[in-house]
Length: 294
Image (tube, rainbow, N blue to C red; front, side, top):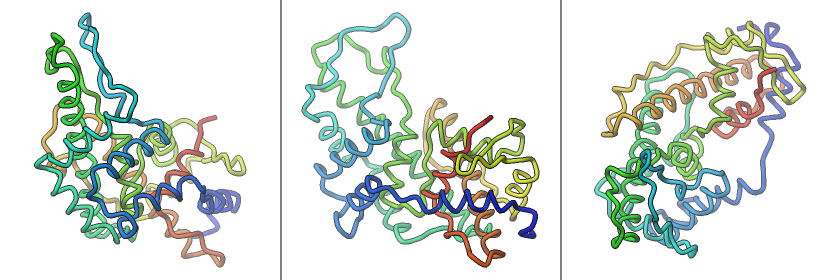
C-alpha cells in the first residue's frame, strides 16, 4: 500500500485518536493491574465489577427481563452492593472460573502483531472464548443471587425470567485486565466498526477528528491491507444457549473488524516518516467511537 493513497487528513485524524489518554480510564487500568492487585480476592473482584460496570453504562445489575405477562414482585437487592459481592462469590465458585483465570494469566503480557499470524489468530480466539465463558458465569451467578433473595416468592427463575447476555460488560471488564488483547464491544463501537471496516457498508462515514470523510477507497484499503484472520463460531468452544450464540457471533465479527483496522494502522505507519502509535484495542475503540455516519 502506498502512503499517497491515504489522505494526510485521515492520518492526522487517526493520530489524534491514538494520542487520547483519559485519567479516568487509567485509574481503571491501574485498579485491574494484576501486579498491583492480584485477581483472587472476592471483595476486590466485586468492587471491580461495580466500578467498571457503572462507569461504562454496562452494569450486570441490569440482568433480566420478564417473559410476557409474567412480571411479579421481586427483590433486586438492598442498595448496599450486596449483588456484586454475592455474584462475585458465586463466580469464583463456578467450575469454569479457574480456567478463565488461567487463560487470562497466559495472555496477560501478550498483544497482537497485526500481521495475520497464527499466534494472533489463537489469541483472538482465546479472547472471544473468555468473553463467552465469563458471560455464562455472570448469568448463572445472577440467577443464583435472585433465587437466594426471593426464596419466599412464587417465581420460576427458569421460565418466568430471561437472563440477559452481558457481552458489553464482559468485554470491558476483561479489557481492563488484559488491555492489549480484549476488544471492547458495545453498540457505539460496533456501529463504528461496521461503518469503517464493514465490507458491505454503503453509508458514507466520517471521522470526527478533522471531520475526515471515509470514502470507498479508504474502506477498501482497510479491508485488503493484510491477509484476513479467519475465525468461525465453531472455534469458540464454550457451551451457551442460542441467545448467547447470536451475540457472540456479533462480537466475533466485531473483533475481526477491529483486528483488521489494527493491521491497516500498522501497515500505513511503516511507510510514514512520523509513525502512528502502535495500534492497541483502546486506540482502535477510540477510532470506532469517533466514526459516525453522515
